[in-house]
Every structure is written in C-alpha cells, then in structure tokens.
Amino acid sequence: MDRPALATFLRSRRDGLKPEDVGLTSGPRRRTAGLRRDEVAALAGMSTDYYVRLEQGRSRQPSEHLLAALARALRLDNDERDYLYRLCGQTAPERTPMDTHVAPSLMRVLDQLTDTPAMILSSLGETLAQNQLSLALHGDHSRFTGPARSSVYRWFTDPHEREAYPPADHDHQSRVQVAHLRASYGLGGEHSRAGALVRALLKASSEFAEIWQRQEVARRFDDHKTLVHPEVGEIEVDCQALFTEDQGQTLLVLTAAPRSEAAQKLALLAVLGQQRFSASLQ
Image (tube, rainbow, N blue to C red; front, side, top):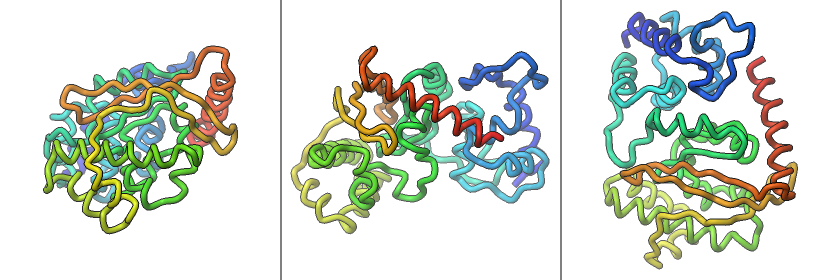
C-alpha cells in the first residue's frame, strides 16, 4: 500500500470536484474550492475521521468494499478506479458486464435526479448508488455485505426484505427476481458471480429452487408497483429503467403521478430524508 501516493491522489480528485458535480449545493459561504472531506466521507458511506486518515497517509489498508465506495464518491473512471486499487495493494476488479463500478457519466444522470427516488443497480440486483430520496424510501443498501448485497439473495433469505411490498405481490416479485437472475446467469455463465449466487440460493431456499426450475428469463422491471414504507404506508409508483449498453447496470427511476397521494408521500419522505442526511453530516 503506497500511503503517500494514495493521499495525494485522493486530495487531487477531491479538489477537482465541485459540489454540483455530485448533486450537492455549494452555499454562499463556501471556503473550499473542491469537495470537503466530510462530503466525500458521506458520499462514500464512511466516517469523516477515517477518510481524513486516508488523506493523511495514516490509515490501514481499505477493504475492497470501501474502495468501491470511494471510487463512486469521487466519480472515478475505470482507469482511475484501477489505479486507486493498485495504490492500496489490491487487485483491480475484472472489467466484465458484471463489473460493479459505476461510470461517472451514469452517476451524473443520477446526481440530476433530486426530486424522485432513483438508484443504480448491478445485474445481480446490488444497489451501487442511491440518491437521497431513494435512501429515504428504501433505506441505505450500502450496509449489506457479501451475498446479501444482492436483492435477490435478501428476498429469499431475509423475511424483512418482503415488507417493502404488499403480501399480495410477493409471489409475483419472487418470479421477477428469479427471472432477472437467470438472465444474468445466461450472460455470465456457471463460473460467474451470478453462478455463485445461484448455487448459494439453491442451498438456502427451497422456494428459489422451485421457481428456478421454471426457466423464466426477463430483463425488465414492472412498469407500475406498490411499495410499502414503514412511516408513510403504501406508495404507488411508476418505474422507468435505463440499461447500460452491455446490460450490466440499470438506472431505476420511480415516479408518482402529479398531485397524487403518492406524490405527497414522496415529498414528505424528501423532507425526512434531508433531515437525516444533515444530522449524519453533523
């Protein structure tokens, strides 16, 4: 791990970003030309103290999970991401359709979506990035590690995952989740991360095993769905999905009809989410 080079690289990338580049407002009394350290830490989901130690060359080797979060927070392209990994003594992830690094161009689209929930998903249902309203609606998915990073795995192994949908929709969602995974399995093959996830689920869930045998394949999302939030109840949303060219990632945008009850609930969640985000920075 080259700590001095890592510190210099992080500072240069942070100084090269403006708040509006990452969906933040600069404010009238801003004294920092680029992003502040606490802003990068919040975007990456780590403590400010830990990020400061990285920039000062005093930290231990970051995990691959933290490096991936840093690369997204600093809007690094693939070459910069690989360089970051090498500075930290880690092997850069292989560039395949199942690569989980989000391109800066896709992040810029997400950054512009501030008034409706939006997230970027991998082909395995891993949440790679969320805007603030998505965090308020779905919770922070960055807390999950290992196989649980995949929504498909959580759906069949964690009963709490299903609380986000009305009980009447559970059977349909089970089939949708499996059909998505089979499409990714066909893309990557038996020895891919999709293959490993399938093997884990076949062992963990008889329900998954039964649906897997149906051979259903799909690479689309429902146009309309009902979500359940613990504080505001059911919210009816329309879904728009933008796939990358290699089908490896999806930008999923949820919208509500203007002046509808669902729109009012999303507006309430936006206020609650901003309050929580401000509290986390403090």
